[in-house]
Length: 97
Image 1 (cartoon, helix red, strand yellow):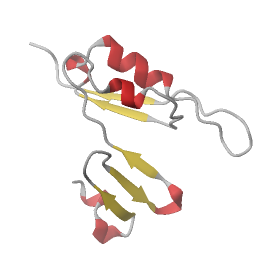
Image 2 (cartoon, rainbow, N blue to C red; image 1 turned 30 degrees about the horizontal axis):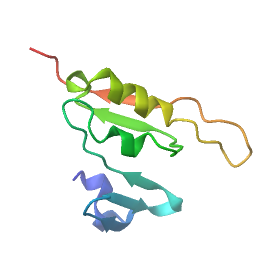
Image 3 (cartoon, one colour; image 1 turned 90 degrees about the vertical axis):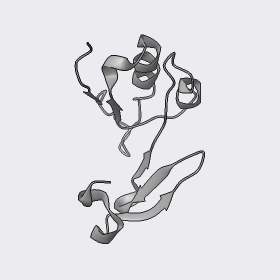
């Protein structure tokens, strides 16, 4: 884990593992972690109802389009003032081949 998000920095208040891994950070921020299979298996669990402020898709070149489409569909969270966040997706990967 990056030192920036380690428990020692005081940014992470709680680590949760198991079937629904997440980190609960200061200021009410929760970071969820999902594993997606090579054919998009597991994406349905992400794509049903959450409204996320952002998504970070790592190794995006290896993901089927289904994964990227469903992750993008969850990025519709409203701010407290009722305005919407802009769509926020970060893709990182290494080139295929």
